[in-house]
Length: 305
Image (cartoon, rainbow, N blue to C red; front, top):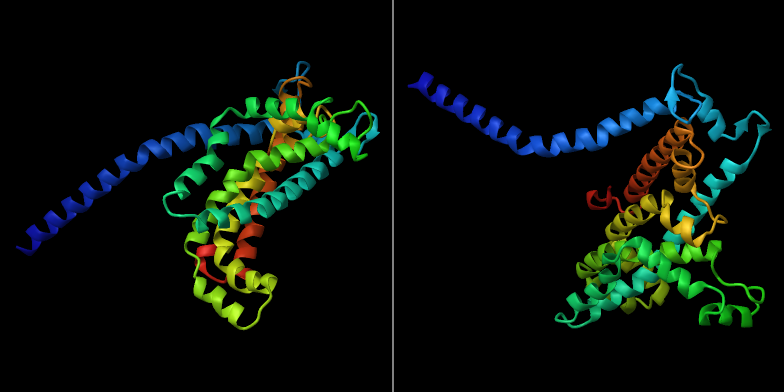
């Protein structure tokens, strides 16, 4: 009887394992084919030599990384370094502005009546249903010379006469904030819905100022949503291509544009692949930094990415 029970149990384990493998296999194959293999190929291309027509070829070399650092046949140029710094600055600035705008919006939605909350969330999300290129062209029309926004900026002395707010770094920042705002509002709204108002009332009873009440009672409770939103905003913003290309007009090129240009106009695949690897490294470094910040500020597992 004992041997029979072991056989039945072994068959059950084999059946469960087989069922688990069949369940996981489609997702695993998808990840391997469309994520792992292209990444491996990209890494291989980055260490190849640029051919006559931009195609990668042997032998292996580090020339693409030298070019990415700014070294060419005419010497060193800081152009690529400026592009990297501009990408980091635009990502940091747009993420901070998104947080500043998203916090009051998420809080306001949670204070609305329950029947109005889905409608308010829908208002925030609906613009992202439109194609990103179409939305960017819309901002180009709003910021072009002769529009009310450009005329107001000209009247305030912010821009020269007959000049528009587009193309400019300001237009790129505005486009990034507009594009990624829903990705910050939704995680913050989820965090605000779990907010323990008793802690806020206790801080107010202890005569804490609004700023101190927010920092000690609200901010720690909304930190998981803030970190999740920061990851959803900062990582794609760092590699953004469409918005800097259209709203920057060549004045606000970011790392994503540099990479795309190497696979298209400049025809230097190894250099483009090296830039893509740099973006991956920056992404992992950002995730690691956010994980450390989450542990230091929150101390709980729920804030760890």
